[in-house]
Amino acid sequence: MASFASMSAPLFSCRRSRSHPIPCATQGRWAFFDKSWSWGHRRLVLPVKCSFPGPNHDAESEDDTSLSVSSSSPSSDFTYKLCAGFGGIGFVETTYLTYLKLTNSDAFCPIGGGNCGDILNSDYAVVFGVPLPLIGLFAYGLVAILGVQLTGKSLPFGISENNGRLVLLGSTTSMAAASAYFLYILGAKFTGASCSYCLLSAMLSFSLLFITLKDFGLQQMQKVVGLQLCIASLVILTLNSSYSSAQSVPSSPAEIDLPYFTTEITSPSSPLALSLAKHLQSIGAKMYGAFWCSHCLEQKQMFGREAAKLLNYVECFPEGYKKGTKILKACADAGIEGFPTWVINGKALSGEQDLSELAKASGFPLNEFSHST
Image (cartoon, rainbow, N blue to C red; front, side, top):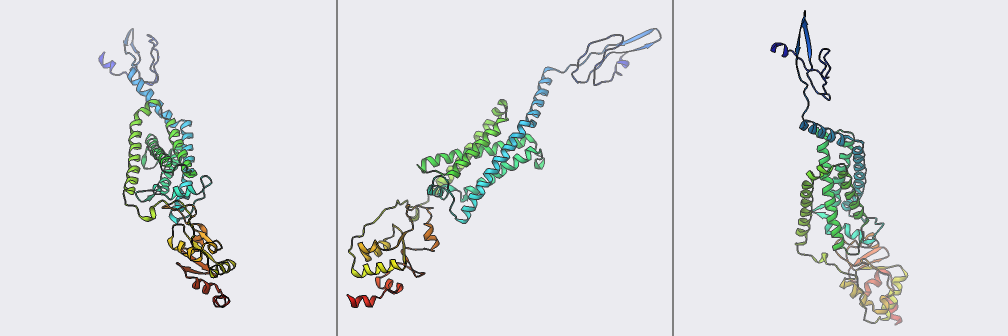
C-alpha cells in the first residue's frame, strides 16, 4: 500500500474523488487528492490530505504582492513623470546660472533687483571652489534622468526599480537639505535681500522630496527615515565646513563691505577751473571714478566746489562696494580699469590729471585764457 501511496502526483487544482468526495481548497497551490483503483470486486482507497499554506507564508506572499503593485502602480508612474518634469525645470535654471557664473555675466533678476546678483556672486555661491549652480545642474539632471528611466522601467546596470526609487529618494533628500540650509543663509546673511532663483530652486527641491515620499508607505518610510537623516546631516556638515574654511581666510581689502557715501568738495574754484569744466562738459568729456577713491577726490578738489559740479562725473559703484559687486555697466562698457579715468574725444587718460593736461587733451585754448586774464 505504501508503494501505491508514493505514486500520487501533485496537481495545480484540487478535485473530488468519485467514491469519496473530500472538500479541498488550495488557493492556487499544489495539492494531493484521493484517487481509487479497483481490481475486480475489491477497491483500494488511498487517503491523501490536502496541503494548506500556513499563515506566515500567506503574509509573506501578500507583502511581496503589495510591494510589487506599489512600485509599478499608475500613481508611481505619475510620480516619476513629475520628478522628471521638475528635475528638467531645475536643470534649465541651473544651466543658465552656471553659464552666468562661468562667463562672469550679470543675471536677469525679475525680483530683488541688484540684490539677486550680489547673492549669486557671493562666497556662498561656491562650495569648495565649485560653483553652486554647477552642483545643482548635476543634481537636477540626475533626478530628471531617474524619473524618465523609472517611468520606462529601463534602469541601467541592471538596477531594480526599488533600488532606483531609493537613489531618487536619496537625491531629493540631499537637495531639500541643501535648500533648507541656503534659506537659512539667505535670511541670516542677506537680510532684506531677495533672490528669485534661490526661491525657485528651494521650491523645486522641497516639491521633489514630497513627491518622492508620496509613494512610500508608512512602514517603508520608517525604514528609510534613518538613511534620510544621515544624508541630510552629511549635506549640511559639508556646506558648513566649506563656508567655515572660506571665512577663516583673512579678508583682503577687496572683501570689505563699503556702503556708498558722498564727499564734500571744500576748495573754491578758480576762473580757469570753471572755464575748463564748462569746456569739458560741452565736448562730452567724462570722468569715471569711485566714491572710495582718494585720487578721485583730489581730482575734484583740484577743480573746486563750483567747477566740480559741472563735470560729467560717472560713479562706477553707486550702490556701494563689497566682494562680488559688479561695476556699473557704463563703466564696464568704457573699459575702465582704474580710477579716476578720463575719456576725452575717445581717448582714455588714466589717473589724476593736472588742469593743463586736461586742457591740452580737450583742445582748450589755455594760452588765450591766460592772456585774457
